[in-house]
Length: 131
Image (cartoon, rainbow, N blue to C red; front, side, top):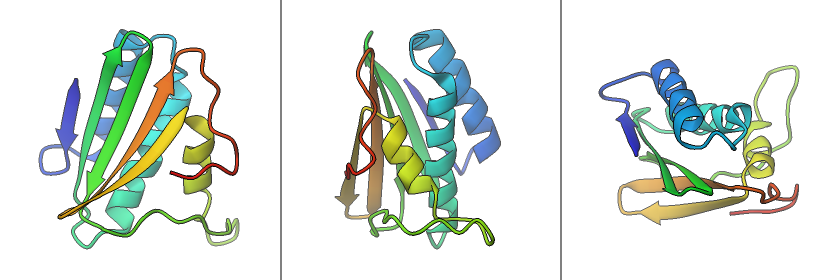
C-alpha cells in the first residue's frame, strides 16, 4: 500500500510514486489512465478545498484489483460541469468517470473520499455512470 499526504509531499511527487506503484504492483493496469485519475483527484482536492490538503492511498487488494483513494476536507460531492476549453476546467470529473472500472464518493465528518477502482479485464465505467 502507498499512502502519501500533502503535509509531507507535493502532487508531482505523489503522481510519480503512483506510477511506480502501478508498474510494480499492477502491471496489467493502464498506467496513463491511473496517472490521469490521480492527477485529477489531487488537483480537485487542491483547487476545491479551503486548505488544499489531501491524502492519497493506493492499494492492490488482490492481484486483479487496483484501488486509488483521495481524501480531502471538502464535503461537496464532485459534480460534472460543462467543459470550458477557453478558460479551462470542467473536463476532469467526466474523465475520471470514464477511466475507472468503478467510482464511489464517500462523505466523512471531516470531508470526503473519492475511490477509483480498476479491475483486471473489467471495462471502464460508461460515460453516464455516477459514483
